[in-house]
Image 1 (cartoon, rainbow, N blue to C red):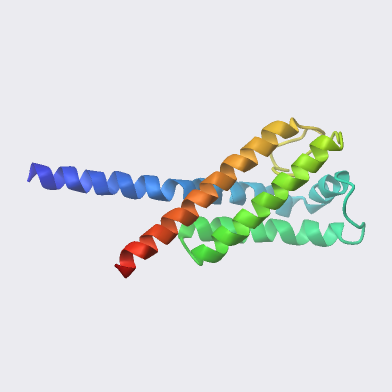
Image 2: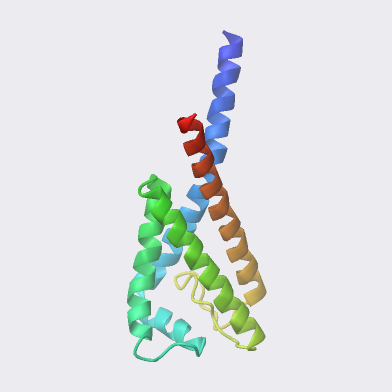
Length: 156
C-alpha cells in the first residue's frame, strides 16, 4: 500500500511540474492582456514609441494584440486548443524579443508595453524585459516538447 502512495505522489508531482510552464506563461499573458484591454490608448502610445509602425496601424494593433494575448493565455491555462495557443504564444514572444532588441540597439528610452496595468514608468530596463521574454519563450518551448512527447507516448 505504501508503494502505491509513493507512485501516486510521483505521478501527481510529475503532472504538476509538467503543467507548471503552461500555467506560468498563460497567467503572464492574461495579466499582460488585461491592462492593455482596459487602457488601449496607453498601449498604442507604447507601440508608437518603437517608431517602427505606420500611424494608421497602431490603433489596430493596440486593439487586437491584447485580445490575442488574452485568448492564448486562457487557452494555455485551460488546456484548450493547446497547439494553436503554444504556436501563437511562441511567435508573439519571438516578435517581442526582436522588438525589444531593436529598441535596445536603437537607443530608445521607452516603456515596452508589456504590462500597461503594472508599469507607470516611461522607460524600463529593456535587457530585463528581453531576458524575461526569453524565459517565457523557453517555458513555451518546454510546453511544446511536453505536448509532443505526450502525443508520442499515446501513439506507442
